[in-house]
Amino acid sequence: MREVTCGHGRVVAVDSVDLDIAAGERVALTGTNGSGKSTLLRAVLGLHRQHTGSILVGGRGTASAVDRAWRRQACAWVPQKPAAGRFPLLAGELLDSAGAPEQTAEAAHDLGVGELRRRPLDALSGGQLQRVYLARAIGCVAAGAGVVLADEPTAALDFAGQEEAAAALTALPVTLVVVTHDRELAARCDRVLDMAAGRLREVTP
Amino acid sequence: MTLAIATTDVGALLQLVPVQRAGWALLLAAVGLPIVGVVIVGLDIMPVRFAMMHVALLGIAVGLLTGLDPMLCALVACALAGAGVAPLARSPAGLSGAMGLLMSMAIAAALLVLSVSGVNASGAFALLWGSILSVGSADLVVVGVLAGVVPALFWWRRRDLALLLYDRELAQCSGVPVGALTLVLLVLVSVAVAGAIKLTGALLVDALTLLPALAARRLGKRLTTIALWAVAIGVAVNTTGFLIALWLDWPPGPVLVLTAGAVVLAVHLLPERSITTWRAQASPPSPPLPSVPSVPPGAPGAPGAPPASRSSR
Image (cartoon, rainbow over all chains, first blue to last red; front, side):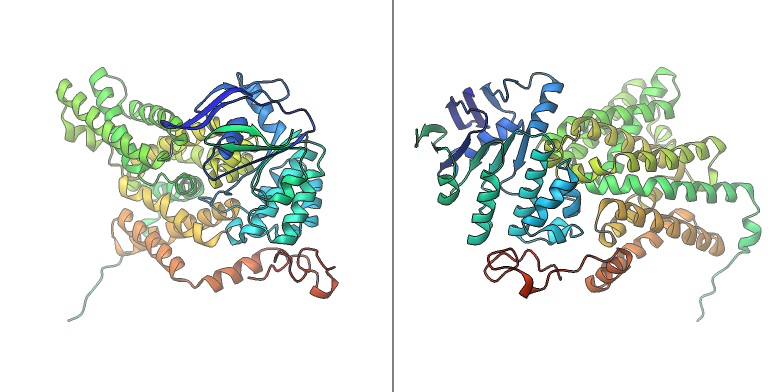
C-alpha cells in the first residue's frame, strides 16, 4: 500500500498509509474504534471505493475488470458485522459460495457448524455466524485465495471459540491481515500494527 | 332483507375465446411474474410499479410526439430507466430511493413533453390501462415469453441471485458480477412490470407480481423455495380468482387482487410454529446431532463451548 487515504464523505478515515506485507506474513491490526482499521481492509477488497493511493495484492492493482475479479478470488473475507441480509440465505448457501465445497464442509464441521447447513443465517447466533464465515474463508483458501482479510473474526466467540478460531486462522498457509482486539490472536501473528486516527504505526518490528 | 348475488354459467363463459385467452394469459403470467415479484421484494423496489407507470407514460408521450409506436417507446423507456438506476444500487439509499426519484422525474418529463407537443395527456394515459379480457394473441406471446425466460434465467443464476439479494457486498466478494446482474434484473423487472400493466391493467400487476411474492417470502426459507411458493400461490390465486370473477360476473382485476391479498393476510396470520413444521416436513431429515456426552471437552458443543451443535429451534 502506498499513500492510501480513505474517506467517508469529508471525514478522513485512513490517512496516508504506507504498508508492505510479505507473502505468507501474519499481521494483526489493532487500534481504537473508529481508527480506520476496517475501512483499510475494505479498501483492499475493493468495497471502499473512496480512496486515493495505490493498493497492490500480489503485485496487481484493480485497474481492469479482470484484475478486480482476480482480487476478489485472491482475498478471502471475514466481515466484522456480517450483513443482516434483506433476504433469507441458508448457512449452506453461504458456505458453498467459497468455491471448494468439500474443504468448506470439513472446516465447518471442525468449527462445530457443519450441522447448521440448512438453517437460515438469521436463525444463527452471532458466534455461529462468525464460525460459518470462518469456515467459508478456509474454503476460499482451499479454492485458491492467497490472502485472508479478517475483521474482528473472534469478537462474537466465547473464550474456547476464540482460541479455536485463532488457531485455525493462523495455521492457514496464506498472508493474513486480521483486525482484532483479541490479544491472544495478535500474539499469534508475526507483526502487530496499531492504528490511531487513520495513521498506522508498527508495534512489533 | 336478503342479498341476492347474480351468478353466471361459468362453463358457458369458458367457451368464449376472449375468456379462454384471459385464462391462458393469467396462467402463463402466474409462472413468470411471481418470480419477478420475488426479485422486486428482494431488491426492495416495491414502488417499481408506480415508477414504471410514469416512465411508460413518458415513453408514450415521446412515441406520440415522434410518430413511433407508443407502446414500443414505453417498453424501451422502461428498459432504459431500469438500466439507468442500476448504478444507484451502490448508494446507501439503494434502489428504493432510486425508484422514488425515477417516478418524480419521469412524470415531470412526461408532462413537459405532453405539454410542449400538445398531445392530450388523458389519451396518452389511456394506452396504459389494459384489461385481462382484451388480451390478444400478441399479448399472449409476450406473457408466454416471460413465462419461459424469467424462470430459466432465475434457475440459471439462482446461486448468484441468492447471494445478491442477501447482501450485495458478500456477493461481490464471492465473485458474483453484481453490477451486471443488478442491471439485467432491473431491466427485466422494468420491462415485465410495464408489459404486464399494458396487458392486465395497473391494478392487476400487484396481484400477479408482488402479492404472491409477499406471501411466499413468509413461507419459504431460501430463495428457490420462495420462488416456488410464489409461482404456486400465483397459479392458485389466478385460477380461483378468475373463476370467482366469472361466476359472479365481477371484474377480474379487483377480484384477483383481493384473492391474492387474502392469501397474503392468511399466510401472515399463520403461527410461525405451523410454518416451521411444514418446512421440516418438506425438507430431507438432518443428520443426527452428536449427543452431549460424546463431545470431547473444549470442542464445540461441550460445556463452556459455543452452542454450535444445538440446532433445535
